[in-house]
Length: 147
Image: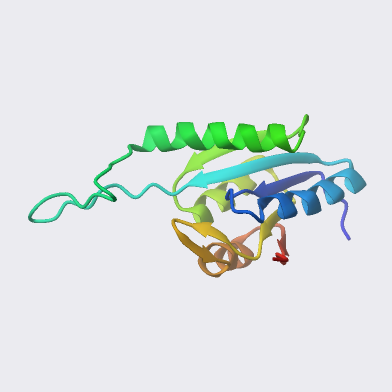
């Protein structure tokens, strides 16, 4: 295994996030590496149709409110896990793109993510993890989630 200096954990707040983080913590401790947690808010604005905007459950939450809520959730997750030295990041956009850009900008040398997660309402490894695996300029560890 390589010596890693900056490990990024992609957090989606699914029940498996804790398992993914625990794996990353072990690697971080062995390598005396920096640990960053990243959550990407995938904001899908209301679609304007010929008749009226489509609203989910008659609610439209703006992007800034979603980011605020995600930051709060990430801080609560970090506090619960007693992460003292992890750096927390919340971005908005497409997870595949934002994770890749974050890795390049912050010189991460390992990305740790779950083999399935939450994307909107659906569970997946599919699109996000598969895209990250193929486009990442560093090592990627996909943690197999045990139910």
